[in-house]
Amino acid sequence: MKRFVLLFLLAACPAKKSGDTPSNPQKKDAGVVVDALALAPAPPVPAVPAGLPPPPEAAVTITPEAVALGELLFWDTRLSINNKLACASCHVPEHGFSGDFQVPTTAGKPNLRRPAALVNLAWQKEYGWDGRYNSLAEHMAAHMRGQLGDDLAAAVTRISDVPGYRAHFDRVTGGGSAADAAMTSLAAYILTRYAGDAPFDRLAREPSVPPDLKAGFALFTGKAQCSVCHTPPLYTDNQYHRLGLIKTADEGRGRVDQAKQGAFKTPTLRGATARRAFFHDASVATLDEAIDWHLAGGVGHGADPSIVDIKKIALTPAERTQLGAFVRALTDAMAPSPKPQLP
Image (cartoon, helix red, strand yellow):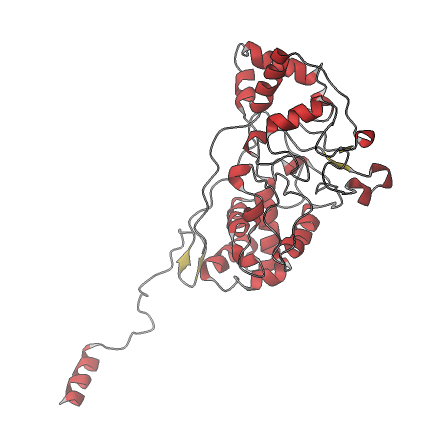
């Protein structure tokens, strides 16, 4: 009897013919399809915000598809050898893509320097606090090994068979190397992390700027001499200056140029109020403390004043308030994009 029922059911369900339509058909207008998985069209490449100059030509091709893939990779802990760290673990988006080096490497080693802000790198030609890397690709490769514990090519093998990632890799390279797609996409994402169109930029476009901010800008570019190193409109000269080593013995640019022992690249002040620590070794916790340290001529926090490239500047209490208000007006208060849904 059971055999009869089984034969009846089989007869009622004829085998699928080769021309039958699959249950999840591939749609030509739904983006790239791999294993019946369609990707939504990638968002446009982020525009350069107001207040920033036109960026130079990038060393990588920046496309919407590459930026979309790069964002996923930036957040994915599967790129680390222990599946615990991602780029975003240290370069925290809500903190202006910077960090305070409390997170150790995957090998459990503490970091000598805090993660610098990954904003406005499109205008840089040397990368890292000491500028030892001549390309962003070289910089990323070194940090993949040092921080995440693996080469990018090896790390990509752990996710390359995930259907969602396969679709992204193929959309970027047209079926080429997943490792190449990952490198290009991470670079495209990082190079489009802009910090601009801050309150001061918006106010500067109005018929009149509030008096305190106008006075603060005049102090910044004049009496306080801040713009000598934090040069507008990027608010960095991308050069290296000695800060007396602060609390940590670190040769800095001395690794590249012996004449620059203890010098570090000037960080941009755009987005500074979002950061949780300042200076290369995170020895200062607040922006106001960092401003006061500079105005005092680099005194305190263990700095050696004999190797500090700044001089004491005396401001009145009112001027100090105006200067601080201007520096804070260089940070856009808009919230960063949330963590994306990973494949």
